[in-house]
Amino acid sequence: MNNFDEFIEKFNDRYAQNSFNPADVQKNMAVAIIPYFISLLFFLPVVCDSKAAFCRFHSNQQLTLFIAEIALSVLMAIFAVIPILGWLLDVLLSLALLGIKCILAYGTYKGKALRIPFIGSFLQVF
Image 1 (spheres, rainbow, N blue to C red):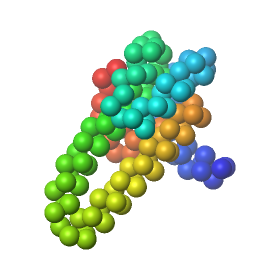
Image 2: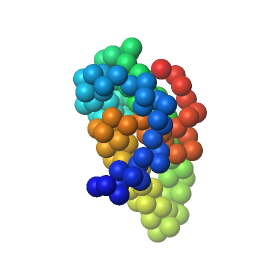
Image 3: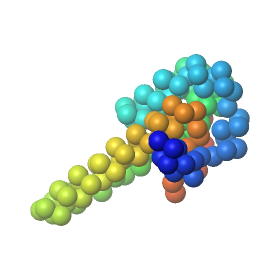
């Protein structure tokens, strides 16, 4: 796991992580992990503890990921009409999205502030 931890450290926002209170991280960890797998619950961490920087950061990342998922779903629906290539693209994008969600959930478990590459800084709603 050491190599994997080194890999995810490249996406860690140290400034945001330093703003996390360790007690809030421990208290809200499960609440922050769940929405990575049930995207519609992106607001759950903020509802549970709106003052914790940990919850606000992960809610913003989850909202960004949710919007990206919607855009990818539309794109996959368009490409789905192409036989074989569209289906293959659908499977590959779905697996990539699942992998990204697992990595983000693991980073949350570790108390990290992993930003989604390219799009993680676009939204600061919470």
